[in-house]
Length: 294
Image (cartoon, rainbow, N blue to C red; front, side):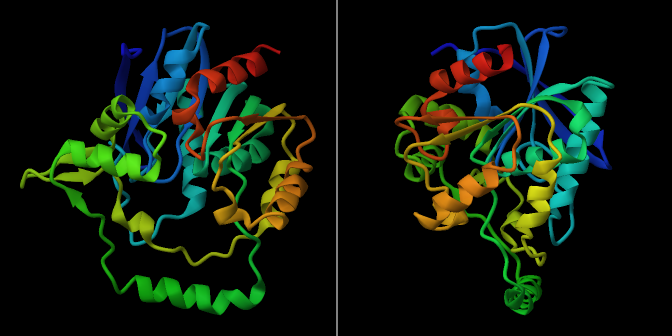
């Protein structure tokens, strides 16, 4: 398979050396794509390959993922992703309203950002970034205790003997991945260490559970503030309910949350799981371009 060539750029964003991946022509219409947890910007390669229009796609690696610098702290704080995104948008699109896409964790980030900076968003695309179960106040002491206990341990991610083993690990998580796609992703998802093993390009500290409760009504207040049209895309074989709640309650809660978006289009991709940009990239690319052209 021939892949659309990309180029790497490194920026210092809020004190950290951050990696930004670009596809397409400088001067073309910009589209920002934000990856999910334990993923990288290169994850959007297959969608980029399927785009038909003239696009400049900008896909950063979040702090502590991919080739971006790790924070050096013992906890990653979610608002930092919003501030990093704001810095990236100001750098590449000063004063412009942008097309913004986020997957999973990235979808959660862009939803909050679009509420905080509604004037900066032309159109918003959320790929299964629905959030977490609502927090109950009585859970707070245990959550703080879990975080404090976690700080006493050193989180680790396992290493792999070969790049092929990394690809096999990706296919274990997503059996829909072809050998070719898994091999491509593996080379961006891991790097060889001095001992010849392959380490995942993600800070193990990301595994640390944070102490802050998930206040869903605060999130929905941000969604209420979004003025741009929003495209919500989910997969027909998603495991999104693992985080949102089992069906039918989870479906009802998703519908309630999406009801806070005033200019909403919804789409479902058939034959895809949560990594829908890997499973059905051509169908997703068509949805994206149709939505942005509307």
